[in-house]
Image (cartoon, rainbow, N blue to C red; front, top):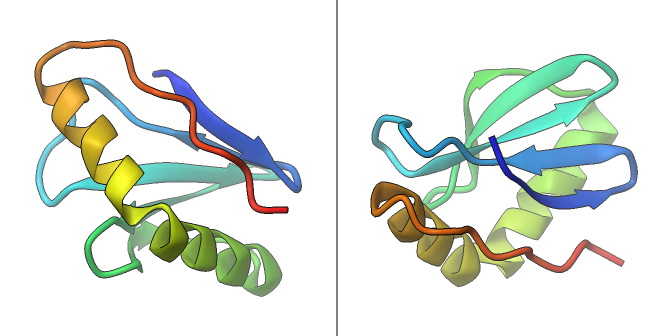
Amino acid sequence: MPIISLFYGIKVTMFYDDHNPPHFHAEYNGRVALIDILNARVLRGSLPPKQLKIILAWCVIHQDELMQNWELSKEDMPLNKISPLM
């Protein structure tokens, strides 16, 4: 499970063999949420409200890069790092 970004204590990962819809995993302080890339919403799990706002904003900003990584993951190609939210 490659780490594609890490910021404000939030670890962002993507699995190679994951299911649709396109999504990534965000982990903070032991809590995990699956985030829908195209709709910037939680599919499953939860994060604290502050971290959820941060990760959803980051998702919108980096949607194209996240979708590129999603496509790379389906082809078992190395994933690109994505800039953290600053």
